[in-house]
Length: 210
Image (cartoon, rainbow, N blue to C red; front, top):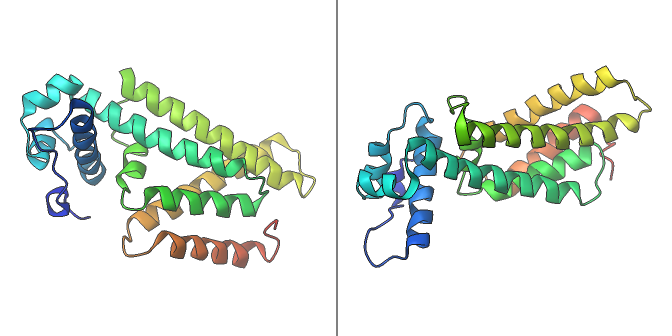
């Protein structure tokens, strides 16, 4: 991963409106949390990368958990909004999966920390971060079940356990593809979208629902 310092993303401390400075700090914090994970990140790490003092972070966000919660709120909000947008396009089955992945890649372009923060296994499970993570995962599952249900309906399968099983499978595939792409920063979003279409085509044949 490219370090935050190397990316040149620093918040600055003077002549910047509070709202803008908060966003600058969140961008740096998100990258640090994304690189290291919540458990391995300290407020001092974020302050150092942002070129500001620890007290300023505490003044704005209250705690490490508060800072993470703000990053998570932005990350989960953007991801869910994009998945809901592609769901509303009307694509069905595998075509919907391809469109969703393509949209997510484009949202994450240059900001893969959004995905890592929203899927951090070391994230706190209590208070605001835990509530946000729980809401994010529940909404993801709802959207996944909706898409998988449409896919199964194409073959006349309305078995509830089939739906549960396939939702779990598709969720794992989806997450694995996005994580793989995040680990290969030289691949452009459109290139990865095309790769996913090829892979799904190889597995499912020409029936992409288009």
